Image 1: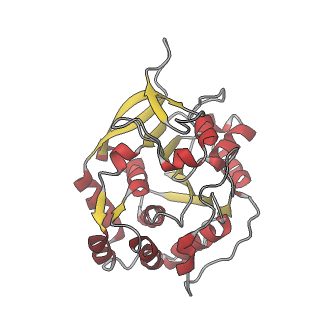
Image 2: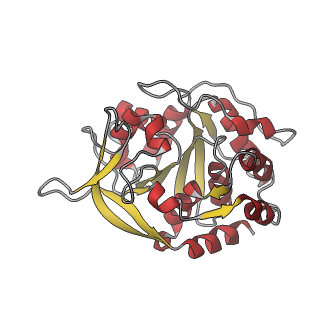
Length: 294
């Protein structure tokens, strides 16, 4: 499966864990990686270090939008980049080349590319706005974004750029992707490990390499590793790990509910455009993820 990854790798450790999985998933043809949020060039270096450690020097990596569309930046730095050390990697400049790369790659492979976005949706919203035909040229759009069933509260990726979230969920007028699948906090928080257990199990996986160093930044301030982004990545290839409900997701762009993602019935006479993960088999997820990295 041809896949593009858009990520804010460098804050939570789950982005790095998702990338490592994709590089080891035999069904995945990773066409490229784009980064988003503050210090996107440092995020590219982290992605490059992981790719190089796994022998992949062929994957294009592009820095993207460093700031949200219309609100102040809430994630200005990339703290895990401090642990890059001597890991071999390419260097990057913040040239904001991600959107053009995404556009060219999707247009060169119409109907074949799955786009996985696991950070704030600034790059993706910009892409959809500049070229409104792009959503319909995708094979599918997979997001780690939102919170849908267990509480009426926001989620970090949606909150970091709510207007981008609004655009990507098709609350505007552009066409929608053939498949639009979201993994929200109500499901992703059920796949977690205590940090001590995660550190012990990661130590047995030679493929993680630099990810283990990046993880130490996360371990210093967290009690658990929650596999938000890896769950979305795994379910592209193993959808049976989750069950799903269909809905139309409305995104709030006003206070005090800015960025909230609310599942609603589809407009009368229309098919619900969004598929939302509803339950997860955590044991099956961990068997697949650790199995790929072992």
